[in-house]
Image (cartoon, rainbow, N blue to C red; front, side, top):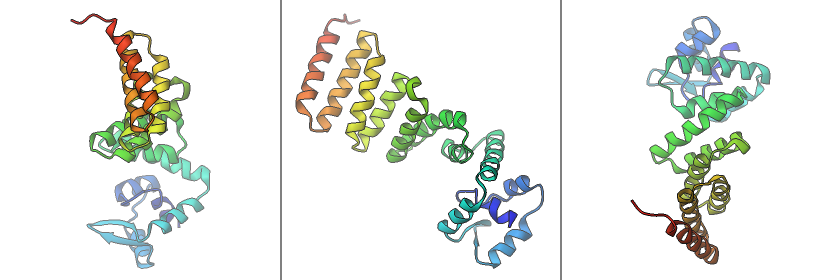
Length: 212
């Protein structure tokens, strides 16, 4: 049962080397026995749960303190080895309730998702990053989150995030650009009067600046 419980912290394929390290013993025979019982399947020389809902049910049955501890151990292993995606690390950080790691990794996972065109994941990770940062969220993070929301049609969120970013800017160039961006989000949301007002304010702000 210990092997099955610990295996359930792996979101997809069960990495046997990591599972063995977590339990400090060889797990191959135990995994084969669990597969014979119908919980696991072997595909491409790797074990995974036959059904996601089975994995989730087993995982949720583990006492929360133990589940957090296992995920924390696995997170340290993956970080020490290097090569794991930020989203994978973030998953275990959240499962471990490690707020400091979640705050750091959410930003990286968002940028990672945006780079590969996973727009909805990028939006969700940016939202999480902003939530974790709270009042400490920088204008740059807020604007990146606003843009990610805009790309998937979450324009109300884009406007709210861009407004927060605007309040943090003090240089005319950045204020003007922030107004320009919010004008775009208002337009996308069908708020044409607000878009026009922001566009006019952006022009007024930027026209006071000298060119190169």
